[in-house]
Amino acid sequence: MARLDVAALPGDGIGPEVTRAALEVLHLVATVGGHELRVTEWPIGWAAIEAGRGPLPDETRDACRAAPAVLVGAVGDPRAGDRPLAERPVTGLLALRRALGCFVNVRPARVSEGHLRFSALRAERARGVDLVFVRELAGGLYYGEPRALDGAEGRAWNTLRYEAEEIERIARFAFETARARRGRLTSVDKANVLETFRLWRATVDRVATDFPDVELEHMLIDRAAMELMVRPAQFDTVLTSNLLGDILSDQAAGVVGSLGLLGSASLGGESDLYEPVHGSAPDLVGTDRANPIGAIASVALMLRHTFDLVEEAALIERAIDAVLAAGHHTADLSSPDGDPTQALGTTALTKRILARVREATPAPA
Ligand code: NAD
Ligand code: IPM
Ligand code: MN
Image (tube, rainbow, N blue to C red; front, side, top):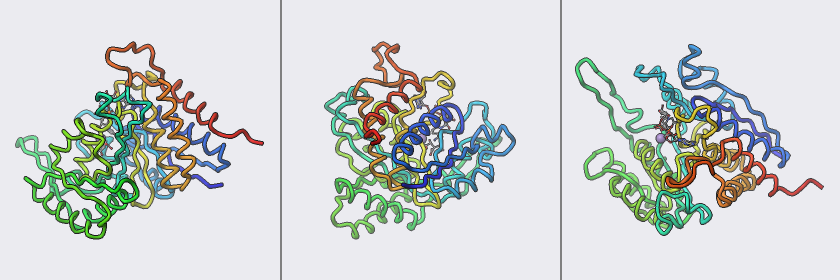
């Protein structure tokens, strides 16, 4: 029996809807496993800005530091308009990642045989896709200084900067990840044009000497984007910088079927942060159409990585797989020419997943 302390940050848009679904699944798994679950909720993003607290209130940050695991729904609201970055919802999430020191973002993307039909690709291309992005999360273009927007002068700039140590620590994590999987690592960069990525490549090569059992390949980002469409099953572990991983992981979501399917784990800091890959989807708020699977998959990652509850994590992942394989899905996974009325709402799909978890759990003696 374990004690599961979780800080939940539902955030904006569909964030609260998918967080609620994920917490229901977490609650069920905790109950059947006899674990003690304690969840507290905190504001972030637009919800916090509206309350006059800024995008990341101090009490939210402190609660996240104190809890071993944090679950974020999503941040972002059209009402933020063109406010400066410091007053925007995304700044709350960026500041939180930084405050916790989470420099690793793990984003798995898998197409199992039962959900081939949901892929944006033809079955023969999507078959066998089982990859994981190891995305650098605490540096790069997102945080580089100097940065500024001088609208009056019609000028703006950002800085793509990495220290060798930052590249080395994320590269080590990626090599370890690849070693525990199929032993293949693809490091993505733009070393043919940008100095930062020349350092990236040289540093990854240096780290590689400690991992002779891992097969390393460097790939330029433009080609990687193409390979992900044409031969996605070739990838095992994919190491990327902050921005390139952001982009490629949304693309991989399309390979799996929808942005609503992928979960992620942000690791390496004081607490672990779990976030679905998608955003606040303002177009779906309050319509019961959000796909909760990305958030639910994030909870599975939480059980595995933070709480070492490998069986419980697998139980959730199998339940997701089974429900999709049985053809149940939300509207984002309806085929463009299919009948959208076949799709289930957030609540109904979550119920199917909960039922599946219950079925797979032995009844108490
Ligand atoms: P988005 O991920 O919110 O939505 C992109 C598209 O995917 C939309 O059509 C949306 O309806 C659909 N979609 C996303 N999640 C879905 C789900 N769970 N189920 C079904 N469909 C889903 O990205 P966007 O539209 O580019 O950005 C909207 C806002 O979200 C912006 O403010 C952006 O900054 C923010 N954002 C936040 C996060 C985060 O909090 N982690 C991530 C990405 C974007
Ligand atoms: C993601 C999101 C975030 C990112 C935004 C909301 C800051 O797009 O987690 O993929 O770019 O890291
Ligand atoms: Mn993104």
